[in-house]
Each structure stands twice: as C-alpha cells, then as structure tokens.
Amino acid sequence: MKVKWPSPVLLVLVSLILGIGLFEISVRILKVHHNINPFWRYHPIIGWSQVPNLRYEYLLNGEKVRVVFNSKGFHDVEHSLEKPLGTRRIVLVGDSFSEALQVNLEETFFRRLEKKLNQRGTDKWEVINLGVGDFGTTQEWVAMTQLGLKYSPDVVICQIFPLNDICNNTIELCDLCKSYNDHYRPYFVISNGELRLTSAQPLRNLLRRYFAAYGVVEHAILKGKGRKLETDFERRYTEGIQKMGLAPLGPSLYTYVPDQEQPEVVAKGWRVTEKILEKMNSWCKERNIQFIPVVIPFEACVGAKNWRSFASGSSPPMIQDYPEKRLGRLFDRLGLPAVLLKEPFERNIDLVLPYVGGHFNAEGHRVTAEAIYSKMVEIGLVTTKT
Image (tube, rainbow, N blue to C red; front, side, top):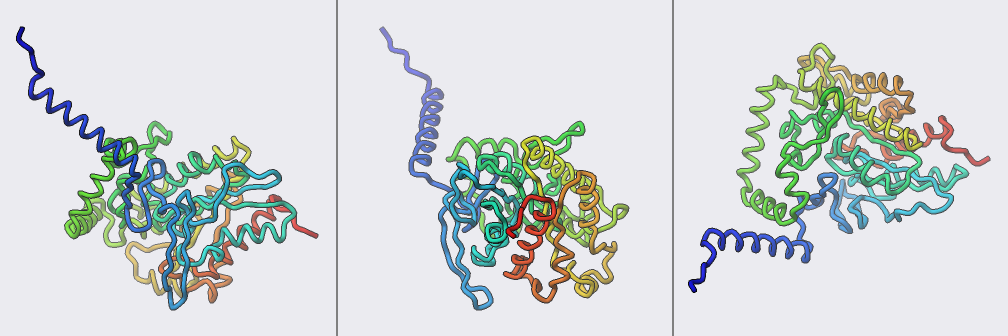
C-alpha cells in the first residue's frame, strides 16, 4: 500500500506555525521585553509604562536627581492592591508632569500631597501615582478604569496639560504631536454621539497585545531603521501640518487659538477631550469616587510678561488663558472641584519659574501640592487637626 505523504505546502505551513509558536513561548518564558525608549516599556493595556524596578541617577543643573520606579512601572513607592483598614486613597493619572522625573521622588507633588494630608488632616491618606510621560487623557481613562480601580480609590486626580493633551487625544493627529509613541496609544473617537475606544493601528495593536513575539520583532525592525525612521517621522509631520492647515503654529499651539480661528481637527480634539473628562467624572460618580481635575499651565502662559514675549505677533492670535476658561466652563457645568494652577503659579512666579525642561521645578511641585490640598479642604474631603 502506497503511503500518501502530506503535501509540501502543508508541511511548510505546519513547520511555520510550530516555529512561530515556539518563538512565542520562548519570548514569554524568557520574559523578553521591548522598550519603546530607555525608560518606557510597551504595556498591553495603557500603551506603555516606565520600566519596572528601574533605578538611575543623573545630574540636572548640577544637582543629583535619583529616579526610582516601583514594581508596577510607575515613579512611586510600592502600594498594595488591598486598601489598608482606615486609609483613604487617591489615584493620580496624568502625563510627564505626574511622572515627574525632573525631581527626586520625595519632592514630587503627589508625595508632598500625601505628606501634607497626613500631617494636617485627621485621616490616614495614601496617594498612588499612575502618571506616565506622553500620556493623553484617553490613556488616563484607561489607567484609571483598568488599573486605578484595583486600588479602591476614594479620590481620582486627573492631571491635564492642554498644550499637548488635545493633540494626544486626536486620532487624526497621530504622528503630528511630536511623539514616537502615537501608534501604541489608545484613542477615543466619537461615534453616534458616544466615545468608542480604538487605536491608530487596530490590527497591529491586537497583535502587540496578544503576541509578545510580534512586539519584539516589530521593535527590532523599527530600531534597525534608525536614522531613516527619524527622517520619515519629520517628513510626515511637515506634510501633515501643511495638509491639515496647522501651519505655522502646529497642532499644540492651536489649542490656544479662539474658537473661530481653530482648524476643525483641533476643535474636534477639544470636543473629544471634554467628552472624555465628562465620562471620567460620570464613571467616578457612579462609584462614589470624588473626581478632581488639575490643569497645568504651559510655562509661557505664566505671567503677562512671559506671554507677551512668547505670543507677540502670533498669527492667528493666541489667548493666554484659553484652556483655563474653556475647561473652567466644563467643570462648572459638571459641578467639579477643579484646580486651575495658572493663578497660584502666577502668585508664586519667582519660585515656580523657570520650569525644568518644560516641567515643574521643586517649587512648582510644592505649590501644586498646596493647591490640591486647599481644594480638598474646601470641598470637605479633609478635616484638619485642631
């Protein structure tokens, strides 16, 4: 009897599947990770996080800064998932202002806030930082709902930086926000009046999430492109802002332009951002969690003199406090106890300026902690010691 062997095509196909499967198993067993950059690692839920347990030191303006990431990959101390008896918890979501790599951990506003609450208030408080650099509000929503809820928070603080949050929240502006991470980030889009979660690369994002080997290979290919990748990125940015009518200001600065002068894509980004914040508030309210938005001012917007120097002759003209006024109207409508940092920063302008690499110096963190603490006392979240 003649034996019928499988066709060569079938053998090749089976071998290929087995090879891919073995590669996937090896990657998972060996825990091979691919870092988006030296500090951020791909994260299947939030897009990226810092590298867990990474520690390093560097000099900033002649001063040594020690950076410590916890086992979850956040710039913070360790926190148990189970809330200690008698403790009230705050979960912080935000971008690089919350990541706060420009100061030592004990100088950050969230560690200062925890210390202040425990020194001045009658309750025991714990502040848990889930902030990661380059995050947009969509990622902060995902971090809050998928990671933050596990800590059983009593309060959620959402740190907002309008200068780039609007861009980072707009899928049409993918690759135009001066970020190499846009293809990894989740986006919300408005569909039939409701927010729908998606990504700029749905298929590739699916593969990244469920097949570790795909992410490793993709990263190796992109890394191999080196300088060409940077050149292509700059070309897409230049072509994109021209095509969308975002020259000469670029998508970030157009967030400061009056409504009637805004390109439609920026106006859309504002609408998406407002809808996300409204969704975050509703989600928190359903769970009896107090939601507190904190709005960070762009350095050039702190003080009239700085603004004149920065924005004089801008075409179209920009409005110094456009984000604060627009977000303020939203927060008033929602009845939210927001913290708008522009005013307290201007009262302390000689201390909080200059920023460090576009971010808070130690005094900026101190003023931020004090402003949040004052708001919490004002709305009755904190009972001060007599």
